[in-house]
Image 1 (spheres, rainbow, N blue to C red):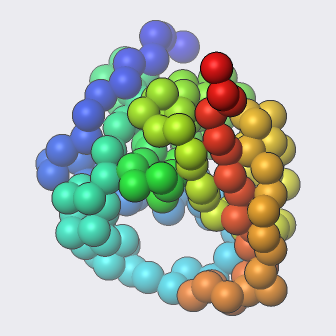
Image 2: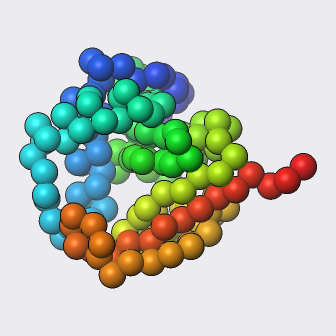
Length: 150
C-alpha cells in the first residue's frame, strides 16, 4: 500500500464521498435498511455537509479510500473502504477531528461492534443509548470525547 494523504474535499468530491460511505456502511452492516437513494446521499453531502463541516478525505495512490465530516462539536461521518480498514486510515482521519475540536460527539449503531471498539480505543465514552430513534429504526449509541485538561 502506498502512503496515505489527507486532502480537503470539495464539491467535485461529493459523489465519490457519498458512494464510499455506502460501500463502507453496507459492507459492515449489510442488514441496515437503505433509506436513501445514492442521489439523495450525494445531495446530503453537497448541501448539508459541505457548507457546514470540515470534509477531509484519505487518499492512497490518488484514490479516495476514507472520508470524515466534522465540526460544530460532532463527527458526522467517518468511513473507510473495507479493503483499507485496519491500516490506520480511520485513526488518521479521526485525529484530524480531535486536533480541531476539544469536545466531540458522534452516533454509531449499537450492532456496529467494530466502530464501537474503534471509538472506545480512541478515548470515546458511551453517554446514551437509544432503542432506534433514527430513520433506520436501529438502536444506536451517542459517544463523546473530551480533550484532557492540561
